[in-house]
Structures are given as C-alpha cells and as structure tokens.
Length: 252
Image (cartoon, rainbow, N blue to C red; front, side, top):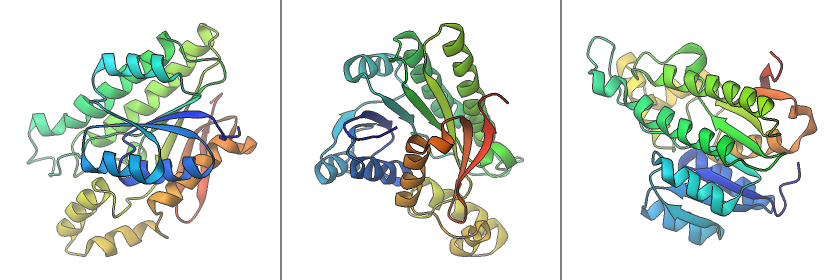
C-alpha cells in the first residue's frame, strides 16, 4: 500500500511512539489526523507536522463514530494507551490493576466497533498497537499485560466479523517488543523495574537489545503497511535489533 495521499487516523499520536509514527506517515505523504486529549503536545505536533488534530477522549464511543464518519480513513491506527500504575501484585489496588482495561481496552472496543459498524471502506487497514507485555506479561503493571493481550484477541475477533459481513477490512496487531525511553510510558515502566532491580533505567532497557526510537517505531509500522511481504501477516513484533518480525499469520 502506498501511503501517499492516504487518509490515516492515529489515536494517541501527539507524543511518544505515536508521534514517531505520525512523523513517518507524514514523510510518506499521508494525510494524518491525530486524536488525543487536549494538550501542548497535541498543538505542537499539529503545528510542527501540518497534520489535522482533534482533541477528544478516545474512550468516548461517540467520538469514535464521529471521527471515522467524518474522516473516513484508509488506515486507522489505535495507538493510545494509559500510563499503567506500577506496583507489585501484593501491593496493587483493584482500581489500579484494572486501569488499563478501563482505558486501553474500552477505547479499543469502541473504535473497533465503529470501524465494523460504520463500516470503513473495503481495503481499509486497522492497526491495533499492543505490547510485548501481551506475550510475556508485566508483573509490575497490574492488568496491563492482560489488557494488551485482550486487544490482540479483539483484533482477531474483528477480522472474523469483517469476513462474516464481507467488509474487506483488515485488522492487524503491532507489538513493540521493548520499552522505549523518552515516551512517557516507557520511562515510567522502565524506572519502576529498574528501581526494583537496583539498576538504572538505561541499564534495564539495554536488556532488550538495540534501542528503538519513536521514529524507528514509526518507520517499522510504515513497513508493515507498505511492504507486500507483510500483507498476509496478523501480528508483528517490532524491535531495534530485528525491525519487523511476523509473529502470527492471518490464518493461524
């Protein structure tokens, strides 16, 4: 898929990995709309990259339907996620444990339903950004790993609905396989794990191999969208060492 002049909606695209993705999409000539809560970061990415920006709470079901109805994107990237409270299992409250479900999963459900029920046009792509925590867990962040795995499942369910209704929409999953410093959530999580281990955050993230900057993340996602080699993949792992790795095919 060539991204030139394609309409792309990115939730959570004002900072961190999302901002790196928006940069990569703009470099490819895409017409990008960023959805995020109102902030200086949202204003900054709009002014710096010339993208459209909508300040909204992505958990609002009406927002998902309104944005997709008005923009009609060729590509939808569900990237937004809450910063999970960090604590050991024996110390975390139920409210903190379930926070990623109340934000990430709730928002994911509303946007996936909107894509299917509007529906988006045949040939549209929906990328759901999950996490490496969906594979190996994340013992210091409560229900975060489970929430990210649920998003993976939900993308699979959405493909089944698309097939049953003959919509022609493809849903795929993106899994960053390492924590990325300078992204807010990555710093928060790496700091908590590093403190528990008595090491620096830099030493902790080095355990994942070569670093993957937000801009590298964006370039890898663009490869998933544009490289025919990834057209039949469903779940893709992204890392600084290996770039893009197909973790699961559409028919598995």
